[in-house]
Length: 61
Image (tube, rainbow, N blue to C red):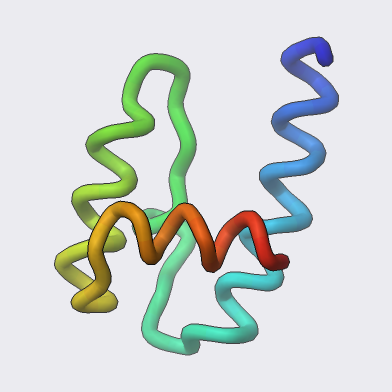
């Protein structure tokens, strides 16, 4: 899978996450290369979920 496919897939997942969790903003879901852990940290704080819970939520979209 190339970078464009990943970004396209993430944009779709990001939209679904924003629908499911109205408190999330574009800044919370900003995915930058090499900053995945930072994004997960923001989501953990904002949603009160563990990293494993977040992985399951994202995979279930």
